[in-house]
Length: 247
Image 1: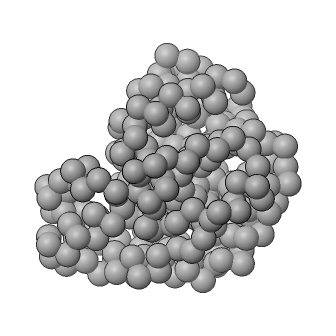
Image 2: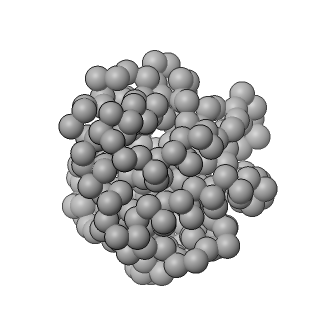
């Protein structure tokens, strides 16, 4: 876990599948005036080591818990996609240690996950295919430069990364019942929560009934895909700062 900056109550950011902690560089500085901000490379991602064998989402969350809850202070959790599912699982594991929950297109709360994308991503081998896969993440293609493709391939080619991502993809795809149980438990809690979602998400499309079932504050963004924190950075930062300051 790396400190991004700031002083105050701790906020921990959890990125999505196939990404890394650098995906939050456009968001974390907005919090530095009032919060102590930390970012994690999830197991099998970024600079972290390959994952240990996992039996499900909760098992993966257990691998994170010692790091996330290293400080005795309650933490605000911010999670995108897979990171959102893990943030919810961490709430179930240690409810008293979480001060609030901000979720961006979290796995488990959508209509259906794009299993083809999850299965295809660990096997990407050419820059053209990689760029095409990355374009699935956004509504506006200008947010995905072709220069990202070789960076992603370089990460995939690190020892053990492809196998780790395949294992995580299987865990997500086969863990829908577990995710449903996690979502149900969080939805029944009084934990403050904010959910942000892109209306044109092709990886984890928004479920029409999700807001009514899950509760909390919601922001659904038009002209936005699976990466609201990037495609609509200014709005997301504003909502996040206001939400965290209110809790």
